[in-house]
Structure formats: C-alpha cells, structure tokens
Image (cartoon, rainbow, N blue to C red):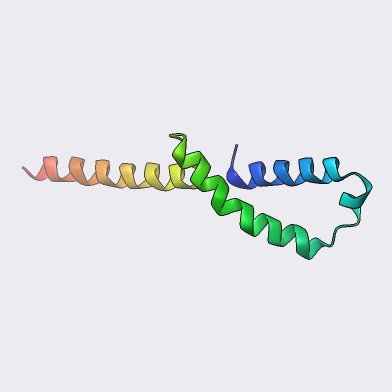
Length: 77
C-alpha cells in the first residue's frame, strides 16, 4: 500500500467517524490534514522498519543502476 493510499484511508476513516460533520468539511481542510499526516506516516513507516513505496522504487532503481555499472566494470577487467 502506498503512502497516498494509506493517507486516503486515514482521511476516509476520519470522515466516517465524524459522520455528517465529515461530509461538510471544506476540501482545503482535508488537503491541509493530508499535508500534515503524510510526513508523520513516513516517519512511522520508517520507524517500524518498512519503507514507502516511492522510497522502495527509488532504491530499486539505484540498485539496478549500480548492478549494471558493476557488470560493465567486470567486462572491462
């Protein structure tokens, strides 16, 4: 589950728990809540030994680039 999906799920739970009040919340408020929640979620995810999907994809891309460089260097030996 990506951070964005997790944030959306949390916002939906908040709206559900607030009931009718959640339906009349301004969009700007939800956007502000999302901006404030996202960094905290990343910290929580990292603290528990997991990485976000975006960070995982970045690390995977970097690992593939390094692997390609190693293969190219070994060919030149």
